[in-house]
Image (cartoon, rainbow, N blue to C red):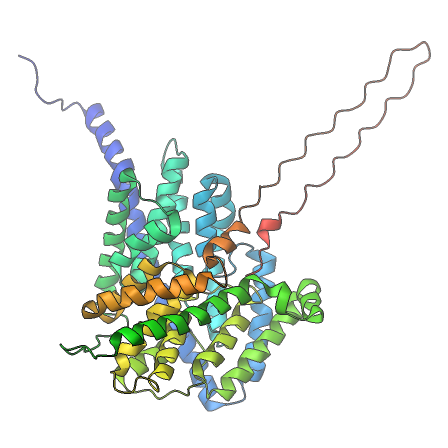
Length: 473
């Protein structure tokens, strides 16, 4: 009688290995991403708390600390961690849209992972206007990418799925926004959605989110805003004006980052090129001066200021969003690791506070939510990701239509000033990798009556420096 089920040890072992490769490696990576995201967030929060303690005790300390930290951070990044600069999302996009293996080894290595965490922590110790969410995306992608070593026969498809799942899981764990993680992977990272990757992607996001929830508890990033049942009559006008204002502001910010050669004076550009550490110290001094002018509100990611405005506990100057933009640009010109999500949300909250002077009959939290999604959509030009993130962060399901409309209009207005920021920065990493120079072939002497000495081979020229390894963000 034939056996219905084969229980031979070899068959069971083979099936177990197949299941491990198909699901287990992704699950293991998702757990690691969730753990690292939570620990990284706590490290950044502790570092900024230490800076604030120093700044409150010694008001003038940032004038010394911030430039020194900037110089050290740039020196470390340029010397040991090329590829860790900026938010990290452009590096992930470049890896996904190129050959994942070679580009991942350069942009998603364990060395880059360590440098991303260490140098961004150093930057927040100096009060830089940087966030941790973008770096968490690159860290998550790097963790998952390096798990390819557990596959006996890894290929480009497996590597691409690992990078995509790790990046989306990183964003989900950083913000506690699982839906935004899925949308971010579709809209920003790949611009497509493959059926074969959908289950793997969603599973990784869920597991990373569960790990983060287990360590942090169930929470919303900015708390819950209370919106009444009846919307104000001027809501449509407020959506339009907020979208236009934040769209222009976000578009100008993107233009400034992508066109530094057109607005930075020639002496400063030369200083940046020839003495980047000194240029970084100058940027750090500028950040410190702006921080002192703002009363310390422009230091750090801006999470506390945005949360305080939403809760009604914070009162900020109408100049806050403009000062915060200056500090944010100064934090990115030197090229140190750091994200732009949280600072963008804080700047958006500042614009919402400013627009409340026009729409004083509307609830301030409503305007702040609209301005946050508008500015984030304008900077990233990813409107769906932006409104889903903000909706999940404030538990603002009642404002879904308003948030969606603001994000779409602001993103379209921003495109009049600059192309999508992350994609433009990613192109700087996607230059062709340098090819190895072939070994020189010794010249063979002709056989003549009188022997001639063999010509010495000429040493090959060293390969050209990889221009994509030193992008300017």
